[in-house]
Image (tube, rainbow, N blue to C red):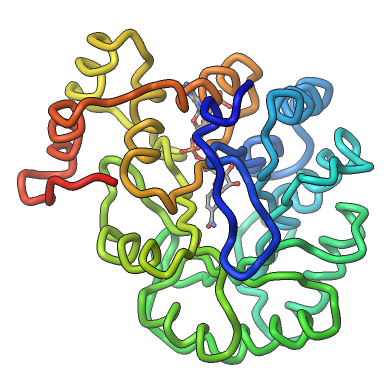
Length: 298
Ligand SMILES: NC(=O)c1ccc[n+]([C@@H]2O[C@H](COP(=O)([O-])OP(=O)(O)OC[C@H]3O[C@@H](n4cnc5c(N)ncnc54)[C@H](OP(=O)(O)O)[C@@H]3O)[C@@H](O)[C@H]2O)c1
């Protein structure tokens, strides 16, 4: 797999961490409802090893997937890790036995979360940790995150965290966090049909900060659009591939972490770096989010 085939490279600002723009999101490796072990643990290991063999060097995870399960599978499949692999995890939630998602944002919660990730991933320091707000379900809500980012900054000074990112945040929260510590990436809900972050993406691009869309394929409600299907048919790709290729074209700071528990889907997703979308096709795809969406691409 060539560098171009994985979407080219991106270096997180102010770091020595360079990744291919096409990575992998590990949430789908846990059991149904992101709870418990996968139905087929060997298949989960196979997906991770296939990703690494294909050149993926950016994996998104969290200790609250499973909980603990996803990190443990990553460790089982990939430890000792390839030198160039960047593992990005997130803090801010916990999963009680009722399988709900609850805030875990006190200094004690965040510190314990770092140690859980270190233990389950088998690491001495975490490459990048996103503070994930529990704003609304899959969207942010305004409110100060200074206390939580300060805790991460302290853990960074102690050497347990190398770099800090944010997830499920507003532009104001990004600006607030940047007064406390450098922010290297933002991970929010964004895809062809869900475009609230257009202005934020452009602003982060100007600063060289990565924007990593979660639910790039629609997440629990896969993207469905007659335009997407028509474009895919025309260029000989699948609709999901077109959705990912559009994100790569959208802005050079966008990094992909599509989630899958299937080796076949993984291969499909990793192949999108080879897809070129014409300006006419990009304009057509921009229309999916509504006639008012601005026509622009990198
Ligand atoms: N920060 C946050 O709050 C947050 C929230 C959600 C997710 N995330 C991260 O973002 C990553 C991506 O999000 P996601 O996994 O929830 O959603 P996603 O990537 O938008 O979509 C995943 C869904 O699409 C299916 N899929 C994947 N590739 C496919 C293909 N080529 N063709 C058809 N179906 C395909 C998967 O099923 P199969 O398994 O059958 O392929 C799965 O059901 C996660 O893995 C996680 O690491 C972060």
